[in-house]
Amino acid sequence: MSSNARAKVRLFVEQPLGAVQPVPLTREQAHYLFGVMRMGVGDSVALFNGQDGEWQAEVAEAGKRGGTLVCREQSQPQVMPPDIWLMFAPIKKARTDFIVEKAVEMGVRRVMPVHTAHTNSERIRQDRLQAHAVEAAEQCGGVFVPEVVELIKLDRVLGSWDTGRRIAFCDEALAGETGRLPDAPGPWAILIGPEGGFSEHERKRLRGMACASPISLGPRILRADTAAVAALTLWQSTLGDWA
Ligand code: SAH
Image (cartoon, rainbow, N blue to C red; front, side, top):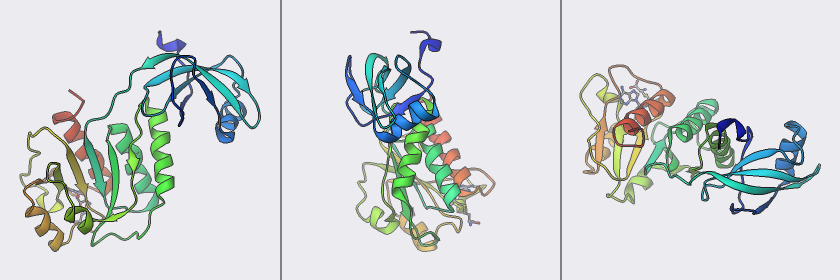
């Protein structure tokens, strides 16, 4: 299929996708496709649900409050991102949104906001962040939407850590020092601290975990949002799916 025959609009849906599968639209989806995007019967939409790859679908019914699409052919197989989680301490709203969006674009399995000793924000809007993840996947051509989990305390996360998963502990105390990502395949999680950095207690605890590797992200102190993108770049280019 040539790329210009592909639909311009991509939509994440919850329904199963397959040949001739009808996909009923929610009110919001119908409003977006027919009201905002001005589409009508016969137009093409690309669909993905995180499980069945990407499908080219055609509008079969278009209404103000609903409608139906019908899947025609698969245009991408289902591909999962590598088994990398991003753990980060939530910061200001816009920057937290940015981290979630970039994590989806860079390719992660799971997004985990963690509450650390120096985290300022006590709450996150998990539903909003999950919606950001869906939008980012729609926009970047991905066929997978990582789950954004509820905010959990770092202490609790580390207390029940499965040691089969390594932690790339991005430690600002290593700015300008050596702290390389080990060339070890397998499941990983990246850990990024808040604006206030990690506490000495957290640093000590993480340094005591055999599965955690302290990582330096260069000689300068990066803001948490920059650090998340930098760490994912580093990981994806050495252990992930960029090769
Ligand atoms: N206030 C702290 C900086 C926190 S930066 C200070 O001045 O020391 C926010 C997070 O980004 C850090 O917790 C760390 O996870 C990551 N980070 C930023 N720069 C880094 C670097 N050069 N090396 C490793 N991690 C870094």
